[in-house]
Amino acid sequence: MTSTDLETSVVATAYARWAPIYDAVCGPVMVMGRRAAAAAARSVGGSILEVGVGTGLSFDDYGAGTEITGIDMSAPMLEKARAKMASGRYPFVRAVHQMDAHHMTFPDATFDCVVAQFVITLVANPEQVLSECHRVVKPGGRIILVNHLYSEVGLAAAVERWAARKTRKLGLRPEFPFARLQAWAQANERTVLVERRKVAPFGIYTLVCFERTAGIRAA
Ligand SMILES: C[S@@+](CC[C@H](N)C(=O)[O-])C[C@H]1O[C@@H](n2cnc3c(N)ncnc32)[C@H](O)[C@@H]1O
Image (cartoon, rainbow, N blue to C red; front, top):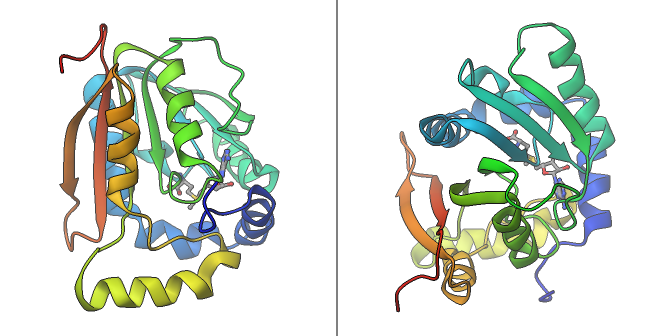
């Protein structure tokens, strides 16, 4: 873990506090990123694992042709997701489990697609979580991430570095660089970067898609 990574206990405390107000605050703000990731996952179809499913805000973005499993380490966030499931509106959501994304209990190659919306920048060890996502996705399957990523240059980058110090306890990490995701992919010879794009309307969020290759990637 580098000095800037978040500790799991800080994240757990933060999301226990977020749970009652999460949908009202983070629903509208992050909706476009969430939808873009779900649309990319729907284009893969089949069994989809949502890592850090939270309160289940993304359930509206899926439907027939998908089978959703969610995991999250926060019981208060999952309680909200389970209440949505109990409404009967989401028959394609099979189950949500309280589970740490660093140590998933699913067998290897279980899912057609793994999605993590607004999660990878705040886990304690992003590389370990990516490797777990890679382990549980089938060869040929995809790992789809959406997040705000560090702007790298200019005023936005300066603001993000400043905000980084202030927002840790809220479970946020605005200065997380794309280079870290790229380095993980380069070190994993059964991974290719399929897509990296800004999400409309303002490009605040970036969608990143990796594929687990069936064989070893050509050099
Ligand atoms: C910003 S919220 C995103 C929730 C949801 N994906 C969305 O788009 O609204 C981050 C979620 O990741 C969960 N989380 C953080 N670290 C985790 C970990 N190590 N394992 C599982 N879930 C984790 C938090 O509990 C929280 O529900």
